[in-house]
Image (cartoon, rainbow, N blue to C red):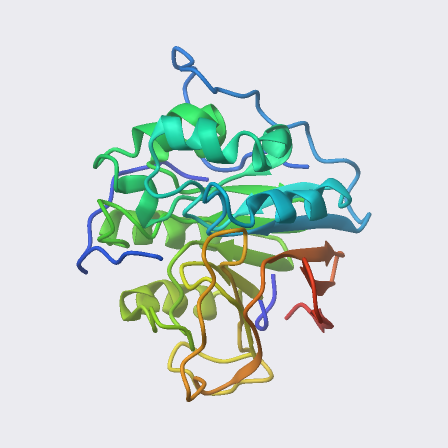
Length: 314
């Protein structure tokens, strides 16, 4: 593992501070969930990853299934893109009830459920404090045994999925941070990415979510390369930076906000946040090509211009 741009132990519950904020292939290495009685919507474990060193495609977005808006259009983009699918929270609107998952998510992004690794957002908890609709729909893939945070591999990359909405939007706390530190300590991958809902840095109307800084501190200390968030309904790419928001081309983590899966879009603040490099208010998905020592990114919008680039892992 590196020291640079890297934007399971036992699962435990977590608690932290911050009022709820409205938001608008893969073998698991986290503790394997015990086989529960499968609720409606439970889906099988993903297939094992193929031979490492083969570049892998990884595609997704957050803030997705708002009935009647853009989820159908972004799902058509994913139709044409192979590989693992991620979500960055707020998967169904206006709350994460099982009904909304079936009415809004299932007809669109539901067709990728057998290759999806989800993460929850605050809307998953708007229906109740246990996010029952989210866990019922995604089943064992959502890893309820560790309350929604877990890790897995995509080719040579290690992916860490976190839950920034526990409980009921409060976010990160000691248990999750302890799990994360243990996870990072044992991680041997050169390239690592982390995905959760609420971004530390944002030029959108929801603004920076400062309570995510302890997570950034850990990820930066362990040289994670890449962070993907949602919550603000827009696309924003940041240059490599440290947890204090200072540009750091050597060890900095590159953050992408991709809250563009289909929910009502947001406008950007008049003054961009420091280190913000690209800002697009358009529905679309993020396509990553993950190689053994680097990654290529491409924001694929439903219309208009996108964004693309290449970065080496630390």
